[in-house]
Image (cartoon, rainbow, N blue to C red; front, side, top):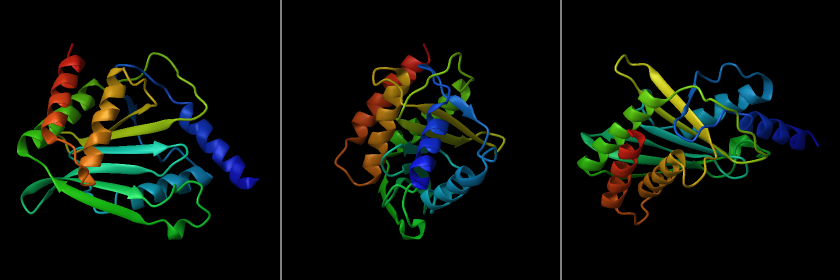
Length: 206
């Protein structure tokens, strides 16, 4: 019963977030949470971001309501650019023993053109992140976080919740999921991802 209550509390906290079709909502941090929520956020990110640099170039995180958390980070390793994709072996929120949750990590080297375009995309997301005009409420879904470091060295985080597939943020999520899959070694064309980013950037700038 306690686990059910905790799960419901997490879902309600997650989905009672602001949503918008065009831009991300700014995230100030997770220090506002207390109790089980604070414990969750303090520990899930610590595990999920293992091996990532402290100052992200471009970092994407997916926090589904009913499946494992996953993320990618664009990293420079030995002078080369990689997408490093991390996922948890099981959903951290409702596992009975969090000590047994394992991190599964893979990486793929990026073509320089795709690396630069991903950086451009996340810089644009940072510039366009703003407070939403309306609330969006749902019963379940996925919260997506997008992080980068600005020119002053400050980490900026934006988020959205379960955007429609045909919305701009829905297209953004699809692109980021493809980049994550690329990092896992899946047979995804870097050229096609680059084209998708170009198209989205053009639409975001309209």
